[in-house]
Length: 188
Image 1 (cartoon, helix red, strand yellow):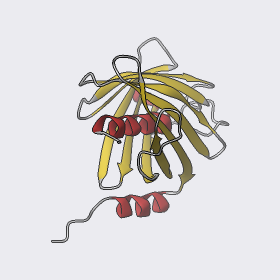
Image 2 (cartoon, rainbow, N blue to C red; image 1 turned 90 degrees about the vertical axis):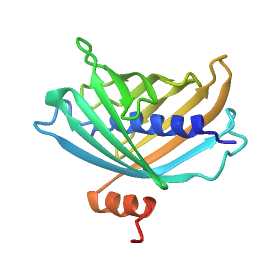
Image 3 (cartoon, one colour; image 1 turned 45 degrees about the vertical axis):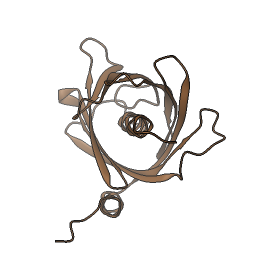
Image 4 (cartoon, rainbow, N blue to C red; image 1 turned 180 degrees about the horizontal axis):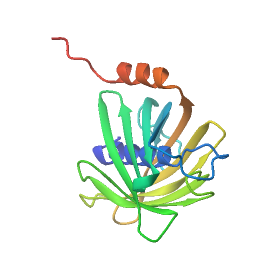
């Protein structure tokens, strides 16, 4: 049953989650633009988790942090597709960022907890631009991994799908190899 809104919601959730991943020992912004890479799985199920809406999918994420510009850009690669998400710090608030994708298919805010630029947990309030629903959930950062658990909720307040991701931090070559396997190549 995964419809397009569930697919978009899964992408949004992952992009936002990967944004929060910074090594917990780092409590100040990095001095320059820095990229971090992740590979893992996303699984979409019924709201109670009992009925899978298809098999888990491998995903790859490149997260580029620019503290001087209060900006993070995510490239999230699913099988056959890639999505760009941007997060910008809300003026006057160190822990709240606005988020949207290049296509304008969603917008919202993400609220982080933990040391600045080394956030350890987050929640989000994201709405689909077409009015199909909202994404509600949370994420947490481990030593070299992150996990998210969220619900896609329809406009009438009914949960429609649960989306769970688990990502491991990887080096750039591992990310690039996984990305290349996920994206189709032009045979010509």
